[in-house]
Image (cartoon, rainbow, N blue to C red; front, side, top):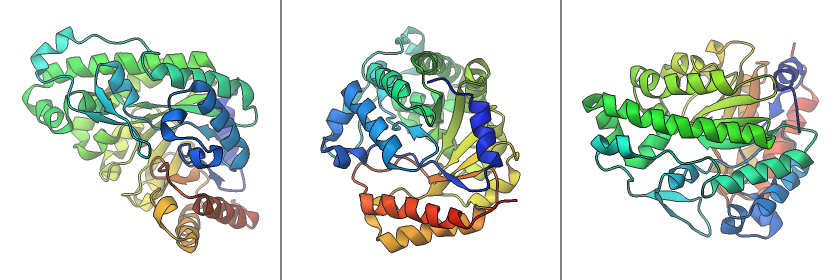
Amino acid sequence: MNKNMRQWRESILDSPHTRAMPVLSYPVISLEGISLPELISDSDILADSLVLLSQRIDSCASVSMMDLSAEAECFGAKVNFSQTDIPTVEGAVITDLSSVDGLEVPQAGACRTGIYLEAAAKASSRIDKKPVFGGVIGPFSLAGRLMGVSELMMACYDDPENVHKLIAKTAAFIRSYILAFREAGANGVIIAEPLAGVVSPDCADEFSSAAICKIVGEMQEDGFMLIYHNCGGNTPKLLPSMLSTGCKAFSVGNQVDLGDILPYVPADTLVLGNLNPVALKNAQEQEVRDLTLGLLNRFGSYRNYVISTGCDTPPDAVWRNIDAFFNTVKQYTANQRRT
């Protein structure tokens, strides 16, 4: 459903209360009584699940999962599927960068990306009170899944010319995938670029941020918003590079202190973070409350702060902890008035 995402962002900035927007979709399997493979292999089930979550949790947006294997699968990567864990990529598609010229760029909608696009279209037509965000991997992180993380990082120094060729192809696919989400009716996309969080700022500039900046310049508009997610521990040093992408919202991982991020982000740019999502799986309810309240007490005064998870919530997170998170936010904001 069409929404003005600039106005949506401004409504968060103008709100007297901190809003919540965790990356949370996988745990719906326990609510629906379905398996993880069923959730990610059927667009009707996924759309129904996103609708259910939009009604069940007080989040300011509907956020689909971060399945960072789907795009690599389109390029021919082998993916391991599990009943309990998110899909993972096994092995490399590219073993010799000199062969990158022959790598074909797949069509958006190939393999499971088609399921996620169909689900976005179906969910967007049914969820009218909040925007719907899809999820994609970033071009640098996708390159790492295609040739191996260590191999890619070495090649950035030993063979940058061919790395640029590879990034051009991964970025071309990501651009087409994001465009397909926009055409499907999604209101935005979260671009997950975790691999950029472990390299130097110069490397991130050259091989990640430049490609994302181009995508943002072509895709972002008032009716469609791009959020940059980086869960690496090097995020504070990478902040100028991240801001150069042109995104108006950034999702930050739980390895960093938001105190090293929020003061240096423009006041009109949202910062999402950064409860450890594993706490929603392993912690006791009181610990979740304490962690959530700790973030709110420290950063709730920032008008551009949106409390969120530092990464995607595990499929086996327990709902008593998820409810504890949202109840704590509700209790905190009942007495909050940002000025």
